[in-house]
Length: 284
Ligand code: NAP
Image (tube, rainbow, N blue to C red):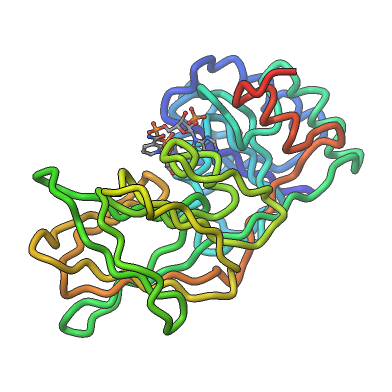
């Protein structure tokens, strides 16, 4: 593991965290590549010491300092998902992150001495097929959310699983979440938490009208097709809360499991249930 890219949010809460990380990586003799945002957190006089991450593609690890939002933003910019991510919580919740900044020296020693595990996360891959036949593609680590734009009126979303009609949701919107995203918007909307080693989608309606329509967990091998119908058909499709597409009743959205996974490097004492207790407040 020689070539290490560092990606951060524009303003790291504590720029000292980046300094400590750089010091540790230098101690281990690593080649360091900084993202444009990471460069904004160091003094310009130090620029020449580091290569630009944007001008290179092949790294052995990407270290992210930020919150979950920073990770999701980075994932949106990635074209290939082979490089593992190690995430340091420089944000608020940091559910997806492995460590707090105070653990940077210990974590770097552990990783470079080979004491880590790989945590592979499924992603979703989608396309929007427009009425005139053009296609826009997207990928998400957390979820894609179809939500109303403009006036708050009930939307009708026809939902198929493969070729079978599941239902036409009458709701404010619909979340199609991966297991990773199940602890985010999905859980706020009343959906279940899915252990991330499972391969599945959760479909969760946003404020469904009536009591019958609930979340459903389906196998990730299925294709989900959504189409907005009825007279209020203008909606938006948000991808991991980072980008959005305008959707109309003539568009069709198809969602499948992404062929690639994202790999997070984890320290040996980490596990998902500890994160639920310590970060989502499940208690002792
Ligand atoms: P944000 O709206 O600024 O913050 C969303 C919050 O969700 C942050 O505290 C974030 O953690 C946390 N989060 C993100 N992914 C998570 C995950 N997989 N498990 C547990 N918590 C997670 O937006 P953002 O930080 O850019 O994150 C985008 C995500 O926000 C979307 O993918 C969506 O899931 C979520 N979202 C939630 C709601 C809601 O709960 N009502 C509404 C819209 C969007 P950090 O503080 O570490 O960034």
